Amino acid sequence: MKDLAAEIENNKLMKMLLESIGDGIFILDNNGHIVTWNPAMERITGFTSGEVLNQNCQILNFNQCFEKDCPKGHHDCGIFKYGKVDPTECMLRHKNGHEINVTKNARVILDSKNNVLGVIEAVTDLTELKKTRLKMEEATRRLGELNRLQGIIGKSKIMQNVFTFIKASAASDATILIQGASGTGKELVAGAIHAIGRRRNKPFVIVNCSALSESLLESELFGHVKGAFTGAIQTRKGRFEEADSGTLFLDEIGEISPYIQIKLLRVLQQKEVERVGESKKRKVNIRIITATNKNLDVLVQQGKFREDLYYRLKVFPIYLPLLKQRKEDIPLLVNHFVSNNNKHTENKVKGVARPAMQAIMEYSWPGNVRELANAIEHAFVLCTDREIYLADLPLEIQNPSPVKPVTYRTQPDKPDGALPVIRSRLSGQKLIDLLTECNWNKAEVARRTGYSRASIWKYMKRWDIPMQPE
Image 1 (cartoon, one colour):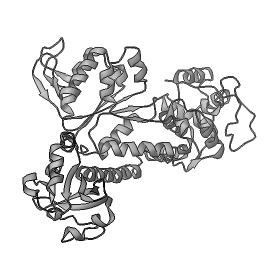
Image 2 (cartoon, rainbow, N blue to C red):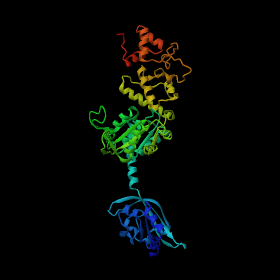
Image 3 (cartoon, one colour):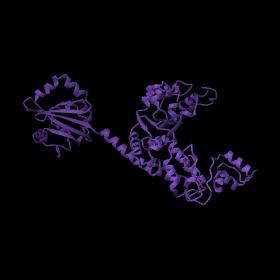
Image 4 (cartoon, rainbow, N blue to C red):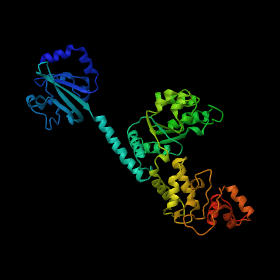
């Protein structure tokens, strides 16, 4: 129907809309002939408007129209019977012969008297979505492998959300900002993202930004040429170049100076670096993951961190919870750390006694997962049995209250009739002083400190203290 085509042609607003919209749009007259074919349809199908005008939509070979193949004639098409096609996922055939995943929906066009003028159909290309879906499925599979290897531990809802973000971020190359308190596992998450992403077989380079001064950090990140500064005795490439094609993880990003902030922003914008002491620009193809235990939003408000860099870094933010916010994960983590320590020590601990586990669950864990790992390692130093007892744990976990010290027996989970004693915190030097006072009588030192003799021996071994004075 030429009137419909002419009406669309003369409507400038309609033409602009059809040309600018990202989805494919085509319009049929009431004889089923294509009268409008927007640029997005050309991109999706490979057919130009000149190749399809005045033809019917059979040229696209949709594999599903009202739950059946495309009809031979337009009068058999259900769109004229039902008036619409709700969004349906199907396939169409590209000009080159391959099939494309799309969703399509359609509506009839009616005039003021409800006469059918034609049909307008919209087509959305699912190719990229399908690729992303496949990437996420692959990321899910690889994350599952990491979990089976106990790379990341957690069954709580809050950690399941973290896993979802990890999988989603691994399917793209977006810059990631991992935020969380010290000890929450930011480096572990960064490693997991790299390990399940498409760059997993490329370098994963880690830089702790708080460990170096501004000048050393600049050289570490960007490299330098021979003679660029005192001590630069040879040319050296920086971590950006070392991470080329892979991932660069910048830990403690909130610690970098304003000068390094500017240089980092240029790298993010231009994807190129300059070594210290030269003006040559070198292209780098890297994914950048950053982490911080600071509130960058507050630092931006205080003028200590560039706002433009902040928004460049937090394209995809991931927030890691405190351990006290995911206490249901603690037994899993404890089992994991016990298993790890069993592999590296002569001890073969089966588990944790109930009172000890109760203390672990009730403790606030200001140091988060890292503190828990250290507490289990500490317990392995003192443990003399098949279970970890309360007395094997660090004192702050046994006695979380700084006001009222609590007394414990030598083995409180297995009372042996010993009188209560107050255990004191030990250090290497304090133990040497006590041994000297007690003429190296380990039993006497044990009585004074509240530890068992076996614990004293283990501490001596741990701190390389000889069994007898030299």
